[in-house]
Length: 121
Length: 121
DNA sequence: CCAAGTGTATTATATAAGTGGTACAATGAA
DNA sequence: TTCATTGTACCACTTATATAATACACTTGG
Image (cartoon, each protein chain N blue to C red):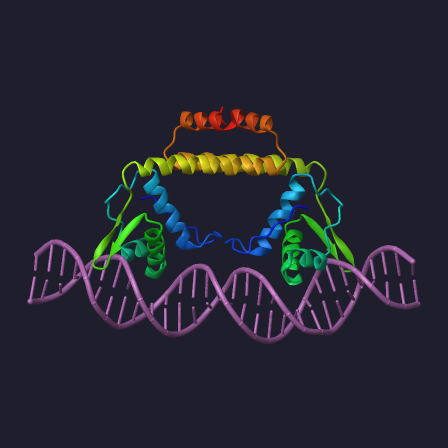
């Protein structure tokens, strides 16, 4: 898992953990049934308080991305097929968000098209 | 000015005010020298405490987007030409951010290209 | 001039968010 | 069974946010 925490980010640390694990699940790095790192291990690795990591795990479970039981490692819970659907939905959502910002900035469809062609080469 | 405040947003209210005014400046709705609404007026309009709006104005001034003097309305301070440069830089930054997320999700350049064509029609 | 309106500053309070420390019961391997 | 490891729960502390109530000095229009 590629986890990097930015303490100076306005985004709370525990939410950064959530995002990182979610991303790992959506991208396919973590699959259904895979165990997550133990709360204490991950906390030690990221130099965080175990409670902070626990908070992230709790949120992930509440969103249905994992399942935890006392005494056993939390495991990823993502029905097969759901992962790819979520992954595509996320990409589309991000692009629509970008488009919305572009419009708010007063750019036209053509302006955006030109930028994309220039950046993407 | 199109200002809408979402009290339930995780983003603090005063930062929402900052973003909204910045966006208005970058999009050209507020130009160099234009007066901002008075702190008290804007607070009444948004049903916020004047202190909250003042905090946003203070931040805007610290970032160089406005200038305030006691007794007179704060005024937008954006050197001509700078606005358009900022506007374009913002668009490009947003797109690169989107591209980064797409890559993190494991999508290829072609995947992204297809999505853009489909969404943009 | 003068009074209304302006940004700025100060102090106080209440609430929520974030983090830290500790204890507990359940799990699972030896 | 034993015991280290696990997720969970609870309490405490600090910080950020938002509101509130004033006060002050400056600008501007009449």
